[in-house]
Length: 278
Image 1 (cartoon, rainbow, N blue to C red):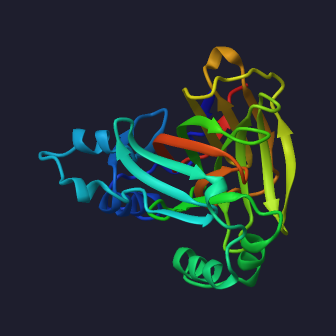
Image 2 (cartoon, rainbow, N blue to C red; image 1 turned 135 degrees about the horizontal axis):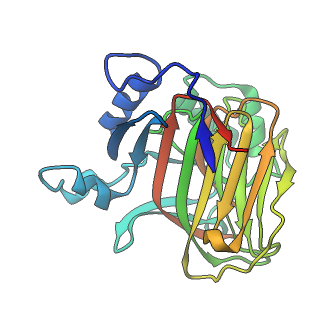
């Protein structure tokens, strides 16, 4: 469980600055923004599923207006976003795209996301060890809060995997929490300098079935990362202290040959520090 540090200055839903302005900006882009305030927690939630967008509006938007609400930007690999029976669905189709991207394409993406091009971003995106990666352009960088989605494992040559990316920097370095069928667990990784490094593994493992939807949740609580997959009863969970800040953009990750789908994507921004309860 998580408990807020109430010694922090309270977040003001309007007329303030920082995260309050960020939440106002996010309302402009997409989703249903739900400012919530109480003695226990003060945060705002951006829900990025179109059926929830409709629930918060007086009139249903036209079909064309519902496209690209996530601001999905594929950095490495082939990524698509469609609206269907499952709502807004993001699909990674690893085998369908050349690997890796060309340097000029990577540079254009860096300028689009960060308003500048760091040579390290291009190096990381075009490295032989790069993985399939996308980012949600319309979502502000996350420093404290929760990022979650449902995933469906469709296929993969040697492994089937799904990951949530967070802490994406202008250098192209990022963190990701993933579930895969090879290990059957949740693991936390860092990608930097053209390769990945395993930071932590969950203690339990279980094979989640392919072709079904499962939850994947990442909570940033200061320098501590909490990640979980599947039903809580399965215990597929980990906690790890990075010892450093995890602020950065959020997105999705898979292995090169994986076909993976994501839906019901939501990001919760927390103004106050959050620490694990004793």
